[in-house]
Image 1 (spheres, rainbow, N blue to C red):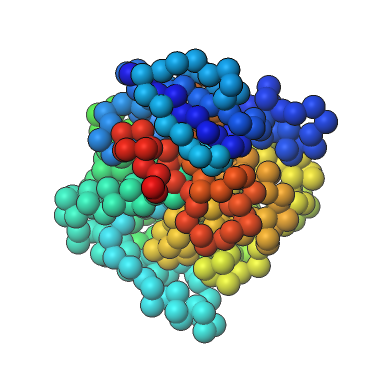
Image 2 (image 1 turned 120 degrees about the vertical axis):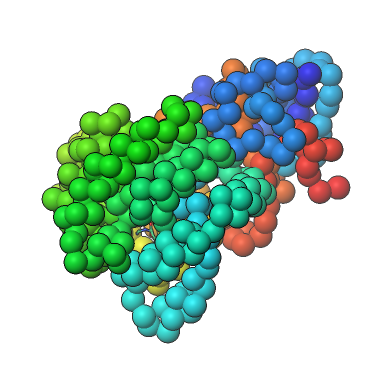
Length: 422
Ligand code: NIG
Ligand code: FE
């Protein structure tokens, strides 16, 4: 079954073949097409389910035609978007959505001056361990709906609130039920029961816990290993511990990622560049040498502006990174401690307002570069999965221009009219 999606006032493809001649570089990269149309084939599954599945659909649909509205071919069905903008669905490449419980009280305390140090993670570990598989499945399913309702079509999920062999294995298995982009974060923090013997916990994470994760059936394997490398937190890992953990994960076939330079200057960025990490995330405090290492290695710097917002921390200067030639991604880090928002439009608005990205750069970072950090091509192209978001707005500019207004949602062909408000 094919559907002609027409009435697209502005189509952002992120494919430069559609760039208008003379466009500024950031605009050219968006590959913008005006008065556009798309044809989507829902009988074929393009990517074997790399994105978040729309409700009621068993496979992803494929884009089979892109062009100007007046050139559009016929199709079995037709949806008219009435001049709305269409963009690649957001790729949220850094989340911790496999958890139970809530820590709103910590947020309130921070707003009156308490600093974040990672200690609250233990509370979420306790709540998550106490939850049943079905509790966690229901929470994950609700969160997947929440993401799509805000335009996110692809998500990475980390473990890290289990911190025992059985609980880490369980979180990875459950996360893998909702996304193929899963990260082993057994080294989120040293759990309280190992506080007196950190080395024993590193041995567990790199030994029996990693082995148990990789003993899961292949369909449940994670793709990445991550570590919270942060000398400014008594709960997180030092550079040496983090290197041991990433190396063990890499030896088991996992690609490293790093939580680095969140609470102060530190070794995380250099370590990530050294071990060939796909990304180093947070990057709140960077030296010139850190920026140079990122530019030289091509390791993606994933900025998480919701964390600076929710922990009242200074925002890193995204402009400085882009001007130095660093690849910059945006993600939510959605988690109960440092950022409880899953809104990629909010991350874009913050990156534009507080990190000095242009709206075009922020959208690219939240789609293509975020996708690149998890091996996903988010561009809107013929043959690609139809992972699209539609905006109740004439232009992608409205993402940053109308912060807090729910204008973005995943395009859902199974719903009448694509799930748009009437
Ligand atoms: O990415 N920094 C470490 N981990 C998370 C926070 C987890 C939590 O506080 O529950 C982060 O910010
Ligand atoms: Fe995180």
